[in-house]
Image 1: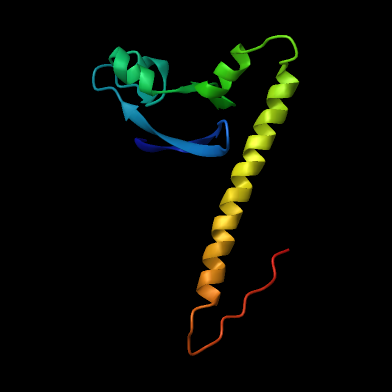
Image 2: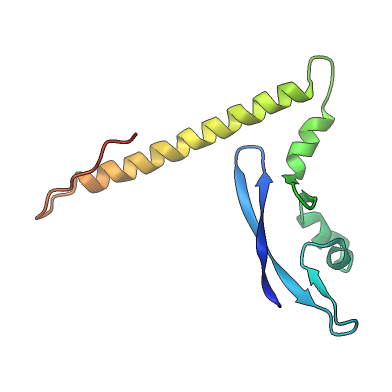
Length: 124
């Protein structure tokens, strides 16, 4: 089976989680299938293209290289626990920004004059 792989990776970034989907590629020489994100495929790319792939992938987890760089900055008082708190704070701020944008669009839509009044449920 070629094309889009059946599993999506949930990636941890500095300010959000996001999903990454990859393709299944078929080698015409050895007739084996490889994921486009596998090391076998990535090592065939030139160094400038490899550097653009900024993810650390394992079979179960995935992480952006920027989070790993934040882990490298460990000094006195800068523990992994502090990093987790910082990531949670960044994710919360990003979520609030997206929520404000969404609610602003909803308010603009609801306030438009129309023949039928818009009735929206209150958010939970």
